[in-house]
Amino acid sequence: MHPGASFTFDDSQWPLMVVRLTGELSSQDFESYLARASHYLQRQERHVCIFDVSALRLLSTEQRQRQVEWLKAHEVLIRQTLLGIVYVVTSPVVRLTMSVIFHFKPPSAPYTIVPDLGAAGAWAAACLEKTSLRPVAERIRRQFDSGSEGDATAPLGAVLPHISPTARPWDRKREG
Image 1: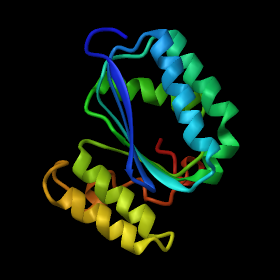
Image 2 (image 1 turned 90 degrees about the vertical axis):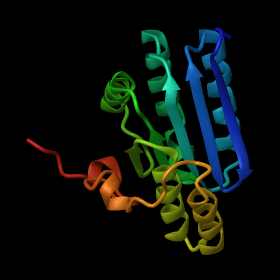
Image 3 (image 1 turned 60 degrees about the vertical axis):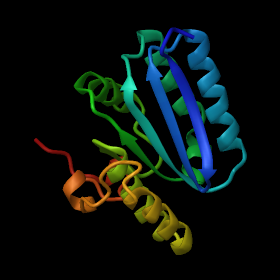
Image 4 (image 1 turned 180 degrees about the vertical axis):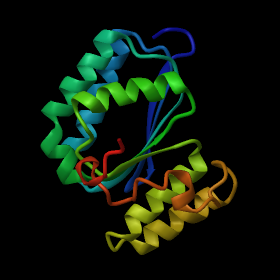
């Protein structure tokens, strides 16, 4: 792993999974990350994922291609198990990279992109609440409202008003 590069999977708040990618992952590390992500999908347990890439450096061309391949190969499992994905993105370059990946393979689950973990926690809690997991949603909301994960007080519509917690990419209206 390159210095300062890492990936973590935190399932301590299951059915909320928090995945963090930081730094510049080597090809081997990226493959390890994909293998771990596959493991969680193969459990076939419904969950919401906060995908924090706020400290990620740009993926290589090969890693972007590999991500698209992985998304295509796991499309059915993603659709069956992921209630929603919320991406925490602060870098315009990473956001552009995600746009390129989503152009070739749109996410198979409802998703949004937010600027901080607080907003991510609020969106994830809303996803859980819509699936009759109100006690879990309240626990997640309390955790993120505590201030330990950022500002969760922003209303969901203020984060990205054009994407709802239940919208799939093909449901959204295209601008232009």
